[in-house]
Amino acid sequence: MIAIGIDTGGTCTDAVVFDTETHKILSQYKTLTTKWDLKEGILKALKGLEPKQLSGAAYISLSTTLATNACVEGKG
Image: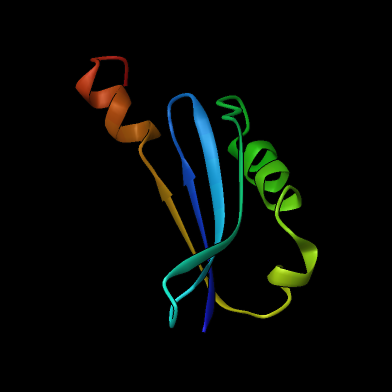
């Protein structure tokens, strides 16, 4: 099964296409986090992945360490 994972962090937004059966990363992309509008960074990360890999995805997971980092750093 193919999955897409996205993480928006304090500095970068990462996206991967992952094969859950072979445990291999099929495609990956990293871009700067757009704190003023997170969807911009998320969309850019998705556009950086291999298009042929995206179409076979069974599910997508979105996580963020941005909020956690802000609390830990006392900035949130």
